[in-house]
Length: 355
Image (tube, rainbow, N blue to C red; front, side):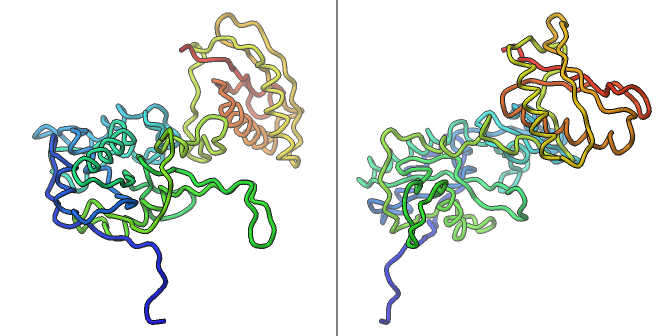
């Protein structure tokens, strides 16, 4: 057999112009890739989408660009997850957890910064519809952006918008070749397409669009775009970092009482202590009336408060706060004791943040 078997291929789309606000992206693509066919998937870098939609921050002459970037990150951030030096990992208003809110200063003029598109799923749907009008083809569209990955060096493109194909391909319940039933496997196919497209687009080649051909995926109806990829709230097992954690909790004077605080704190500490059995720590739970400042849970250690015990309570309180945050509680930990002092080491204030 002289030819390889049929499979999936990835193709660049050369000949595209430098885009700016108001430009016709679909028209430019139709002109540069008249060979598009039904079933193709376009992978379009989010920077191009953001530029044509005007999702830019202008940097005034004489203004420090990095300071402007930090202000833009503040504006796009709804929660700081972790911080180390100038680097911030944040949750954006789109629901993505990403470094620097996805704001980019590369491949753009020095007087501008590029934001993430306002709604990349909507952008993908519009581009798909316009290409159907212009070329008479039914394609999928993935809007890609470059993200880092926890526990792995390097960056990779992922999908932040999609239309015309499922974000996840669900294999749960299927049986593999060895007779094993798959229990948790869901493949983020749009992320795989984004990464494949970047192999031919690259970061320096000036090729913002790629086409993946040969992948047969049915269009979902309704089409949720990339929303199924977002894992936040109770499903987020890593909602806080460790050494560089920035706690997602409200100040105590903003907490309001919420039913079930004592039970939630008891469960959270029970899980934390069970996970760290080598620490000789004793907890007592005692909610107190404290006006509109939420519930107050007193946390005690066995006396005396030794350095080892102090380290123990730090680890256990941290684990408990992560669990409470994942369950939707607003918390604030207030240390009380010093080494050698009272067995009362701190008060956990918890409740709900005002809407």
